[in-house]
Image (cartoon, rainbow, N blue to C red):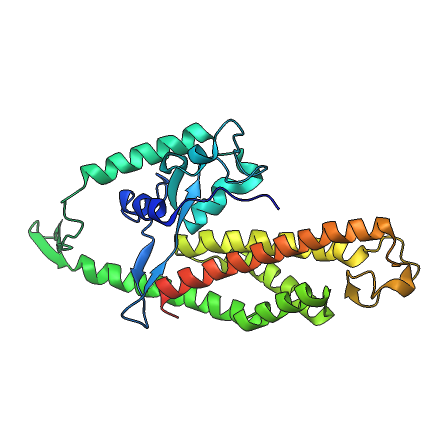
Length: 305
C-alpha cells in the first residue's frame, strides 16, 4: 500500500495556530475548538490540517511534480473545519483548485494578523425605537435586543433538538456502529437494518426536517450524502454479488463463500471482484461513520445533548 505524505505533528500545530483555530474558508470561518463539556482537561476539536495537493497519488489535486518534502511542508497545508475539509475533496477536488485554496490560506492568515490584539467581544446594546403617537408626541421604547436574540436562539435550539431526537429514534449511534461492525465483519446486513437506513434517509430528505443551525445542517448534508452513497451500494453490488446467482438471494450478503449455492463459488474472477467490492465497502462504511461522528460532535457542541 502506498504511503501517505502526512504533515508532522509540529507542522500541524503551527498550521492551527497561524489560522487561530478558525476555518480558512472565507464563507465559513467557523471556530474549531471549544472546552469539553465533561472534562476540564480536554477540549472539543473539529479542525483539520488539510492537504492542498493530495498526500497520496490519486487523491484530490495530486501533483506528481512535488517532492515528498514539498508535499509535507506547511506551504501545502490549509487549516479547515471538518465540514469544509470534506467539501473541498469531493469529486476528486475538481471544484476547488490549488490556486483557490492557496488564496483562501493567504487571505485568512492576513485576516488573523490584522485582527491580532483586537477584542472579539462586545456588549449587546439596548435598542431605542421611537414612534409617533396619535397626538403627535414621540414615544421611546427600549427593547432588550440581547433578550430577544436569546429567546430566538432558544427557539432554534428546541427545534433542532426535536429533529435530532426524532432521527435518533430511527437510527441511534450504537445501532449504526453495530450495523457497520457486522457488515465489515461478515459482509451481511439484516433486512430490518436496511429499513432503518432507508427510513433515516427519507426523514433527513424532508424539507420540514432541516436543522435551522447552519453548522448542524451543513454537517447533516455531509452525513446524508454518505448515507445515500452507502445505501445505493447496498442495493446494487452488495446485494447482487456474485452476479451469476442461480437463485434468489434471501440474505443480503456479499461474501461468495456464503453464496456458494447461488453461483458464488470462489473462482479467480469472483475472488478479484470480491476484493474490489470489499475495498469499496470498507471505504463507504468508514466515510459514513466519519460523517456521522462529525455530525454528533457538532450537535453536542451546539445543542449540548
